[in-house]
Structure formats: C-alpha cells, structure tokens
Length: 202
Ligand SMILES: Cc1cc2nc3c(=O)[nH]c(=O)nc-3n(C[C@H](O)[C@H](O)[C@H](O)COP(=O)(O)O)c2cc1C
Image 1 (cartoon, protein in one colour):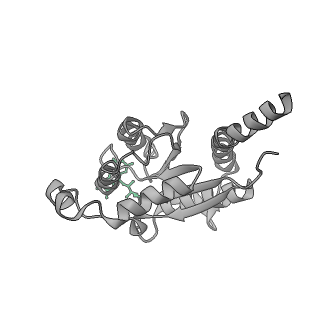
Image 2: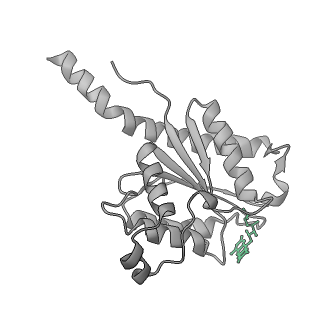
C-alpha cells in the first residue's frame, strides 16, 4: 500500500518588506498549493536570520541557527518553492548570503531537493533575470530545479483582494504549480510504489 499523505512544500519568500509583492505571490501560491491537496509552509527571511558570511565567525561559532533551521526545514519537506525579488538583475544579497551559510553544512541540505523558482516585480520583466542568477548556486549545490519558472510582471497592480486579478495569470500559476507538484509527487511516492510492485510480483 503506498502512502497518500499530503506533499509538504516549503514556500520561502525572500522579501520581508511590508507590502511585498513577492509575499503576496507566495501567499497566493500557498493557497493554491493547499487547494491542490498539498501542505505548504510559508516562511521568510525573519525565520532564517543569519549574519553576513564570515569564515572566521564560522570557525569560532559554527553555522548560525537560522541556516541550521532552513536545513532542517529542507529535510522535513518534499520540495521548496522560492519566491524572490530581483535586485539589480540578480538575486538579493540577503538570499545569496543565506545560501552561502547553508552550503557550509555537509552533506548539503539542498542536494536532491526539488525546487521551483518564482518572482514578482513591478517591472515588465517580472524579476526573471534574478531567478536565472539564483539557479546557478542552487544547481551547483545539487538542487533539482524545475525547468519552468514563474515571473509576475507589473506585480504592483496584479493583485486584487489578495489573489491575482487576471484569470489568465491564475491559470498560468496553477499550471506551473501543478506541473511541479506532479514531479514532486512522482519522486516522493516512487520508492514506495516500486516496493509495492516488487512485493506484488514476488
Ligand atoms: C536594490 C534594489 C534593486 C532592484 N533591482 C531591480 C531589478 O533589477 N529588476 C526589477 O525588476 N526590479 C528591481 N527592483 C525593484 C523591485 O522589484 C521592487 O522593489 C519589488 O517591489 C521588490 O520586491 P518586494 O515587493 O517583494 O519586496 C529593485 C529594488 C531594489 C530595492
């Protein structure tokens, strides 16, 4: 018998700003993941506070609690959705700093973790270039990133009552989330399904 427990998804929003458009997108995505039967856990930078990376500090005090906390959350979930602003055509320095701290934990907590990248920006490009830069360290650290990413352009005017105003944008988001969930589900359930098939054949 294979497990049908809900898939657990960590949703990490990289902006803690009041009125953050990325937070609005992360909240919408979390609601849509829950509606699809998954269990999202929405977190942000305040859940993973770390100082600027400093090798001497690491030598003296070890990896900070915030980085260990994220590592623990990665282990407890079946996948991660990262929702991040674009800063100067790249990822925010605070997110890269968090990734740098987490990379000091061995084995890498990111290795083999399935991830989906999303962004929101008032610009017409929607923060997509920031996500392209974010792929580089995360893939280097063994994360299995979904090929399709979701970028929301003109995000400052895209929401109405907490949800995406345009049906076409809601459909586009549901399609990406559904596709990602299907991959996470296959990867998560396959070992049990394979064992069940082997037992049935025996
Ligand atoms: C330092 C800085 C650099 C930025 N660079 C970009 C950029 O390269 N591309 C872009 O689309 N928006 C850029 N923006 C605008 C952000 O997309 C905008 O402030 C957005 O609202 C930030 O996301 P948040 O609302 O989730 O905090 C930048 C903002 C800041 C503060």
